[in-house]
Length: 190
Ligand code: AMP
Image 1: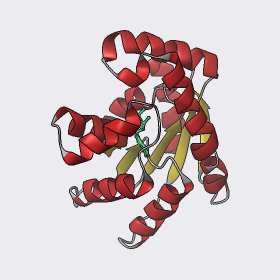
Image 2: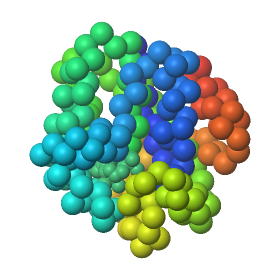
Image 3: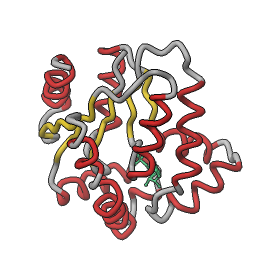
Image 4: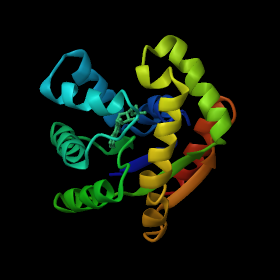
């Protein structure tokens, strides 16, 4: 069983790459952003709460996010492994995930980061915002706030996973196929 954390700033291509990797390695793809957006679309209580944070580009509180993620994992008891996309985003989430997996006799196999320059990513997100319909992609101020959240709360996770010898990074700039190949080269060696 392999459990992979796909790591990277907003716009780095995590969602795009996850679509390929989940097929290739037979993994259950869990994107917390997608799950929140699904809840917003269906106007659930969770969606209404998440929306107040997401629309500003703020992170949704840990307690809510962790509970939701754990319940999604529990919905897939026969999974051959998970591909976590957009989770964990804080140290508290990473620690909770380790503890949760450990309680099931599992662990994170590796974290793979997609690296790219901020200015390229902001331009990519603004471009995506023209068609994605996502309010958090359409306003440069919200996008910059998402980067600030990333730098303050998510970037420290690199050290968390480095300390466990689980952190790998690949260049996220290139064609979709090129980046998939770089990620696969890392995963194949695990
Ligand atoms: P994403 O689709 O991964 O870019 O996530 C979109 C938004 O959903 C983020 O800006 C946050 O508001 C929220 N979100 C997604 N994943 C998390 C998480 N792990 N922790 C807190 N908020 C999250």
